[in-house]
Image (tube, rainbow, N blue to C red; front, side, top):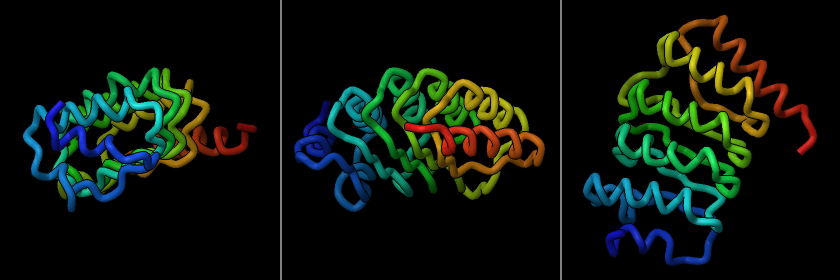
Length: 161
């Protein structure tokens, strides 16, 4: 991991907020992927706010690989980046095995406020088995699929922790 990436994990705070103003926007793509790996391997970070930090699908894919087995991270904000449906699908697939994430924000990616029915169906399918996510900032273009997603989130919110 680069020095810049490792600095994000050097503090004792369980939260990473506004890394763009400090480091992440200046990192090369491989360094950003190292940050993603570090987040899911780190057992102290509970909140990661990477909103508006010019992240792309490779970051989402690296995060997704580790999120399935991570129970520490509870809030992940990836809004306002350049994730496509491919990156969002990878993150959704990780929800099948994830038992810690309570809030995931992937809305408003590169000028888009909603995702197509194929991506939304994957999200809804993955939420069927996830019992921890209660907040998802994601908008489907298909109202029926969005209703399925909302139903899963409501079920999770109603279940005891």
